Image (cartoon, rainbow, N blue to C red; front, side, top):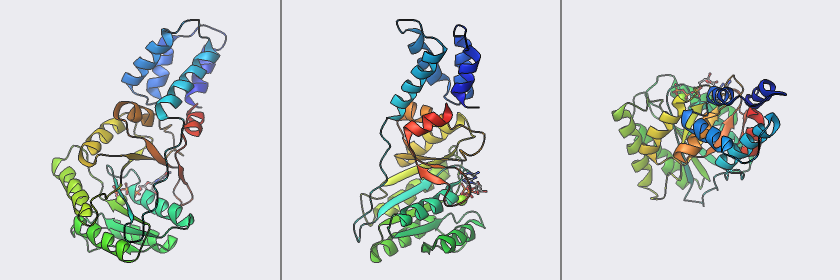
Length: 282
Ligand SMILES: Nc1nc2c(ncn2[C@@H]2O[C@H](COP(=O)(O)OP(=O)(O)OP(=O)(O)O)[C@@H](O)[C@H]2O)c(=O)[nH]1
Ligand SMILES: [Mg+2]
């Protein structure tokens, strides 16, 4: 049951139980800070809110945080100057799958795409992306296991430039945001990509798992520090997680959601739409 339907059913016909509302919002992964702000704001409003209007008010507040307009799809690069999308995140959140889905999404819009297999750390990772590359028919640049991830991205960037591709999407190894040396490696990948185009990577995104809850905020905080993030992909929204953490992420860290993953196939992927997202969690 959606977060807000739950609130509604609890308050049906009665007064609003603010503690209950607070608990529901926290359970929905909006985080303590945002929840407290939201509840204070609603309590401070003139005129009595009833169960219906408190849900509507929450909905409006959340849409306002997310921004009513859907964030733009990254524009394609010019020939010889591909748009570069660097994708990071902690282990197992869905980075590789999302890179492939995004490649298929952009290809489906008529663009040419190159992928880089810069997760050289996990033995099966290169093979995993190669299988995707064959399936969606997108060229992949890779190296051997334990190769240098920065060098793979550099080579892939060269190839994307030489072939006039519109986009380059770089997959990276899962890394804990608390591991300093691994975060430094990510910065190095970014600097290496900038060598052939100082404006690249244009998009620096983190993938977060919708079922992770409020730890997602700390993940984004650390990756933002390393990569100056400008986007989030939220995966596994087909599972039990409502993805409320993206509201806290936008509110506290200013990093907007860009795409969502809703399953394991290439089609289970769409551009983030704040209005629809809020309907979904309600
Ligand atoms: N249900 C569901 N499963 C997903 C989604 N995205 C990814 N997965 C699954 O999650 C698992 C991990 O996905 P990967 O793409 O390998 O994750 P990763 O972040 O690249 O993992 P590492 O490279 O090991 O850090 C796989 O079984 C995927 O099929 C999604 O949106 N919904
Ligand atoms: Mg991976």
